[in-house]
Image (cartoon, rainbow, N blue to C red; front, top):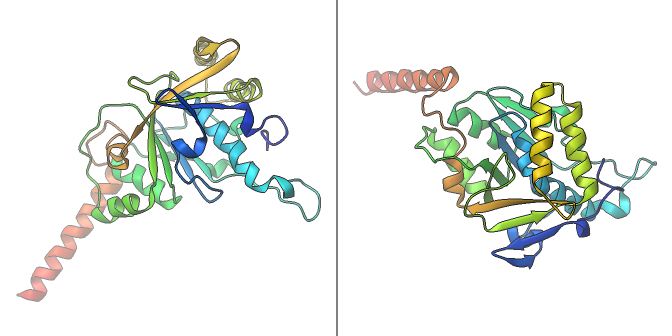
Length: 255
């Protein structure tokens, strides 16, 4: 729990449409049972959503703070926040309190498989990279599950700044140290990639503090921004074959 004693919710500043707000204005009715998922599609991309993640972490710990600790009778707990790595692992987010490691999920680059992974973790708040929406192929059951459960969604950028943003989060020194430590210890990154990411983070600083921007989007739009790949992968194609077989069996019974 790298955030518990190093920082607090009050260390972050939030703006919505240029007005000072709370996290609950960005994620209405945010609570200790919320499960955040970030879809990451490129090397170190999750750092672009770090201010949201780190501030939400501190807010989560506020719900449990009186009982937090490692002594008998106290709670040692991590929030149910998940990183969905599309295609391959793009970084390790341990120092950003994405823990245990099973919360970093590598998923096939296929809309259906990405959304299945999101559904399986019960995600209620979804962050997707700010890419051009596509018309993905989903099983209707998968799509309906997501629409009935996910409360709100944001578009983010691996660079930390999105176009036409309406949300701004300014982080704190302790939070940014965790982000930088995450980059430095990640074995998934080359020396060159680490240098590029560290330079990118430095470019986001104003008066020593990092500011990231986001854009609120409809959940239905977010589901069209999980990937730019429109072709079903092998796992999803196997589903379609099962459905085709079921149709043939049903036809035979009718005849």
